[in-house]
Image (cartoon, rainbow, N blue to C red; front, side, top):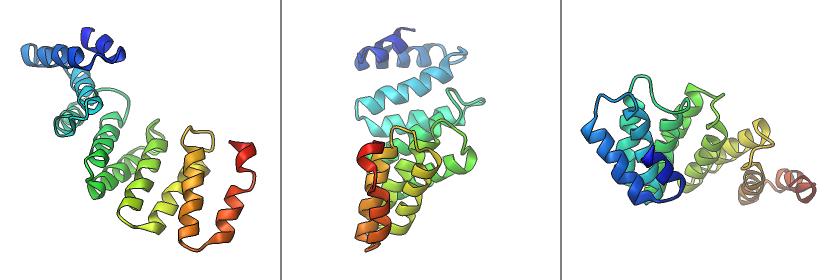
Length: 174
């Protein structure tokens, strides 16, 4: 509870110490899974990515995995992306979508997948991922930037008519 509340209040060092202490001193506590996932989020917020990745992988390996469905996998992908490991991030985002396209993390996974593809200089897969996000989740918070970056990527691909069609009505819609 202390770790959770401290994380909510952005007191990351307090949260980290409390969660590490719980995991270390009480490994059989039923809250260890949730604490491990939260510890990963704390480390991610501190930009301490390697230990965050370890925590997310540990959480994902637990039975049952803590948190929402596919939450640990999503944070693992986000961490890999922040570490600049775009190929691994792409694989993790793709695995999340394949495992549970109905997950509440799927729209964000499509966005991360598209950006991973862009970072890897894979234009067509990026276009496909942005398009899937915009089409399947038009009301998601990432739909406006995904629409913009989809149009920009289409322009880079010299597909100007498709880009213009996307941008018509953009200011009114978003």
